[in-house]
Image: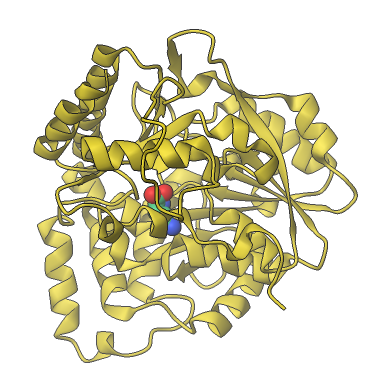
Length: 408
Ligand code: GLN
């Protein structure tokens, strides 16, 4: 008998995969780049491929060079002297790291709070491990035209009411996918206070930490008073270095969280791929001196602006993202002919699945329907939006913007 519920349904990334769309469709769907990681990181990957040691298993904790590089980069960020044996764990992408935390900590019926919209992987990752997702919506103020990701707010009474004796964990995602929200210090303090009061673990997915705009400060909930001991922070080389296929991520937190998670990750993958850990290490060793993230932020800011200008021109509402590389477009006014030939994979899903399909086929730009980031009961909220990724080169984004202007 199949497991029940949404966990085994086809994922949105596969439905809107480039392979299912016309070849000339510009892919602003799944968040990955159409450019390579920086040369110095690729060089390190090549060097590693020519090294015998890096062609074989690594320690399940991660290669010492990468853990050392993570320590060097993160010590000042966390204001700690991180222990590379106990407090840092390299994972096969951030996703596997999160999954391993659930494997290690969730018992049947444990509840995990996530803010809605939520990155879609959280849901099956929780339910596959016997957990029960509990959703707390971020409320967008859609009444005015110029909404920013900061206008998506938490109702703290609602958050408190969502906590039960079975609540084990709360997932924070800042900068947020798909909204682009950078949680403020006050918001994180509010979440931290509840985590303390109810003795909850916090999983803080910060994979877009290096991508903030408009001078927004990335605040780490692990750094708030008393929070280190109950927080695991998730990071990603793919997001930091434009290398999403490398599948190198990491977890940072107290030994009490990292060590059980190490046991889980060891059983799932044993270790992460070795050569690309070396590449990620080279990346982290050099980012500060190269001012890589400062430069990258400028580039992403320019990319973001291309879509913002486009949406302003066509007069559709959107959320101005203050972090990550996604932008939500309000597609409630986009319409299509009554008998439009939609494939089975999108029929019967939210209206946004139809809209995204129609925009991809007729305007040649793919995006991701946002109801996938909502639980089934709240599809009606998510189906207002399509998510466009702006992690593409400027020429591609300009071409996409030109096509989307026809939506007017
Ligand atoms: N994080 C990426 C996105 O949101 C891709 C996620 C995935 O493929 N599972 O687009």
